Every structure is written in C-alpha cells, then in structure tokens.
Image (cartoon, rainbow, N blue to C red; front, top):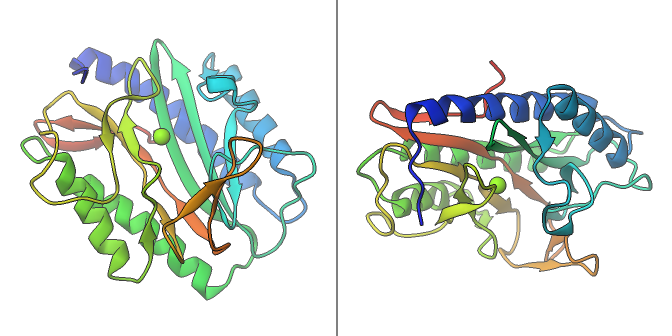
Length: 250
Ligand code: MG
C-alpha cells in the first residue's frame, strides 16, 4: 500500500531528512585515512541522538549499527568495525537514516578517502549524476519506470552496471514502504507517481558485473567480481511543483 503524505507530514519528513542529511555530511567529513568505520558510526549516532532523533538502521532487522559503511567492493549494508581502518584511495559509501517526529529520512553518499583513482572518481560522478537524472523524472503523472530507466540509461551508457538485487523504496512512517523503486526498468511502466508520494531513490552502481553476494555476516553485500561500487541516495517527495529533495541539510 502506498501512503500519500499531506503537506504537514511532508514538513515533518523534511525535519527527519535534515537530520539524516547533516549526519551524512558529518560522516563524510570524518572520512580520512587512519579512521575506523566504527568511529564514523559513533559520530553519526551521537549527532542523531543529540538532535533528539533515533538512528533508523540501529536494530532494524537486527542491524548492529547506526550507519551502513561499505568500502570499495562492498555495495551496501557494510557493518562498521573497529578493525576496519580506512586507507588512502578507498571509496566509502555511507548510508544513514534518522527517525524524528514519526518519520524517517534516508540518504547515502559515496565519499573519497584522500586521493582516489580516476576510475573511482568517474564511478562516483556517474552514480551521483544518475541519482539526479532519476530525481528529474520523479514528477506527478510519470511512472516508476521513468525514474528507473533514466538511472539505468545514464550509467549503462558509461559502461557501468545497475545492481538488480536491491532497489529503492517508499519511505515515511516506516523506513521501507511501497512502492519499490528499482534502478532499472522501462519508461512508461510501473506505478504512477502521485503528489504526496515519498520515495528513496538510491542507485547502487558497479564498475563491473551487476551481480552481488551477501557475506556470512548476513549483511555486507559485495560485488561478485570484486570490482568497486558506489551508492547515492536521497529521499524525495512528489509534489505538484515537481520533485522535492527532503534530505537536505538546510
Ligand atoms: Mg534506502
């Protein structure tokens, strides 16, 4: 069931989104060689709790941390660890949700750790741009397939591949709501977008094969071929005036 939000609910979601976004910015500023992923997670949790919010992911399905931190060939759902020390050249995908006043904000960004290779930077640029290509299509009257195909066409034209096994989603009072928002699909197909719908668009883009596998910890998802992967996400609202990004810092 798709839950449409009133403008009052959207302003609450913007608050949750603001906290999520600021937590993500803080996490990104902490990414540097020598820092552990557990330290970044601690900063995220401290900030979210200081704002009177709750980390959406902490305890979700048993997830043991506040941020998912996925490095290099890790696609999503990486578990922060004291043993994982970031090093120069890593790319670090951080996914953060905050729950505030009854609503979630969900966002992600892939940050460079120090100097990264040209190839890695190109993947980051393409994945970020594909998110905004998708957001542009998030207009009332369009369909989910219009978002999905915009993302897919943008990245496949650059010889990257779209993860199939995980997709974006509706977001609101629950972290994961209907509809599913895949990053691959056919224009003009799927659920029609209506004002008041709130969705997380989150391309997960691999340098090599689209195939992924989940490690024994039951969370960390890695590329099947060991090549790098990037992940960018915003929570957005469909409004009569067009798409509005809810996960902004101000
Ligand atoms: Mg999400």
